[in-house]
Image (cartoon, rainbow, N blue to C red; front, side, top):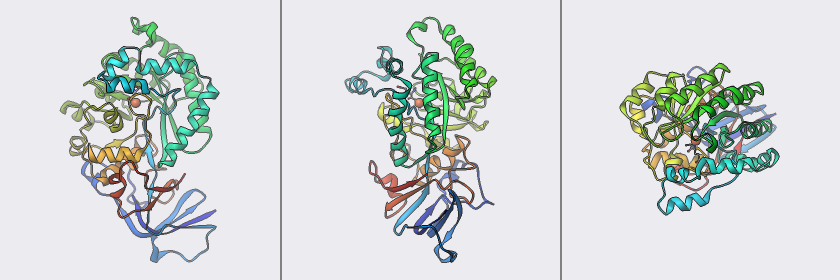
Length: 408
Ligand code: NIG
Ligand code: FE
């Protein structure tokens, strides 16, 4: 099956095989290779060829899409979500509007523990059923690969239930999905005074089962004051590594938690959040292959300080933006909106924002060989926009949908 997309106003994020890169660093992120007035040929789901319209080969196609006035981009890669959850938490949203902090809401039995309560009483089938439209909505908004975490189970049965649902979502084969095991998200009440007891449960009971069923790609932990200390995070990551699980952790969201250092120590593929960051942490990232994943949607929704993207870019780091879609701190999976926040609040240019959610996003899930750019041989996972005046218009026209069609 051969499909032609013709008359593309701008084909965005193109790469030839020869100049193929794994990720884009620092100030290079402001460069985005594009072809004006382009064609793209898809052969059996893969990018077969592309170029300027004047070089379009004369042949017939099974299907032709005319993209006059429209742009084509690689789909967005959302490398940090809690898409599988049992219920929304707008009651806490109202508490925060009235002055309670995220930490205070959590301490009052809200937050992650509230989600865990709801997770306990939902069946696997029901959880799967309500997750499908969430996944479809993310795809509709341009997401072409996604990471999904457990972490609202907080006991063996419920953590496995979440991970099995993620596996069933994978099996739908809509888009590539990676799974993270996040039992170290919060201490359940019965282990409030017995942290080592819960860590032992994670390490000796949950992890062997997760590994046995092959349910996870990554180990995650919420390394934060009041949640998991550096030493506790260290234990979890070390145990995960024994089963071949790569660390990908929550770090420095509410405080300078030491999460970056412990993530880098364990060769994490990424450290995520980073609202609270100093020079020492930036140096630590510079001496590593660990990617900084920024989640501006969570800073927006919790009205917290935004992540210092400019300092990371000036330090020549390959910045990634993801959604953090979850019921507590970011009830949106819309990557277009995350890009708008990256531009307006993190002061990233539209080019930098697009690099951060395409090629760099792919790298933060180890998918850069198959996704993240328009390159011959990569998956034809594509966004076709509406007729728009410029590429910058996508983050500029915030909270609107500039997407006509998503091909995954
Ligand atoms: O990434 N920070 C920790 N975990 C999630 C939010 C969890 C929740 O409130 O449900 C996050 O923001
Ligand atoms: Fe998160």
